[in-house]
Image (cartoon, rainbow over all chains, first blue to last red; front, side, top):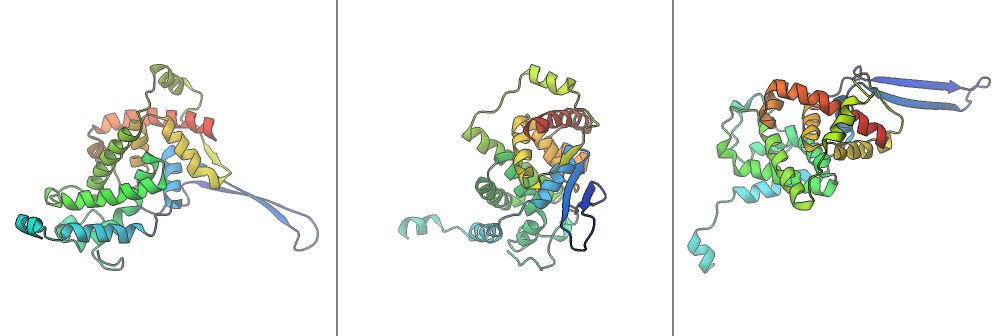
Length: 78
Length: 189
């Protein structure tokens, strides 16, 4: 998946800053806008973290699968 | 599997250069495709633990049947097909399918929430949950379609290939899927 083009959705920054002294608390609200469900889903997919445990799990499972299977007589006799 | 920095990662477009018979090649396959496959499983199953198990199953199933993969198709579309079938099987084993009546379809079709609908998201933290509830509320066919079309790496032709439909059918269903999603998203937001 290509990284989502940030231009594709509009990121609105609404900033309200207090008048007066420097360092006044700024209340900031962000909202994201998407035109289609696909854009919304794409954004969600990019935010979703794949569990770090998955890669070693799949690696182990594939390694296990790639081992040559025991001949039938070895399975019986051990 | 090979570590992520090994240059064997297939993008799905250079299948001829990757020998899928070799277990070592699957590190690259995993790195290239784990995110879209995990996300599809997550949104089809609605549970991170089940999605993790299902993603592992998908890669193992693909590895087991690697001899049937000729490299003529895109590895990504092939994995998607395995993932969709696997999740459908898991879902049918866990609970009955949601049946949507014609009346519900009509509500989606005639709703004012049409093509001009804009998704305004203020609460990012709950976005995943809202998307999950919305996807759960629409027919499985629409859910799969939206999840596939959301993957920018897939063309409409590839989506058609994965779902076994024509491109025209995909376009028509996508229109209805978008309307259904918009109406349900409005309810769950």
